[in-house]
Image (cartoon, rainbow, N blue to C red; front, side, top):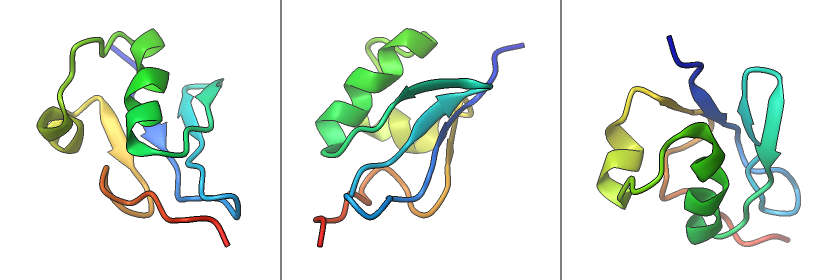
Length: 71
């Protein structure tokens, strides 16, 4: 069974911590960086629509379209 990738709510800088199990995958800021940070989890080639619907991702604090501007 694959461990889901969890995208946490934005932090004060506007980035969203991304973790899989106990491994931190990164702190992407724009949505495009988010896709890049997910590649190590085996989600290569996932398009934007799949990001919102795949069971391998858990979005906390908003879905893939929530990437606030810092400040």
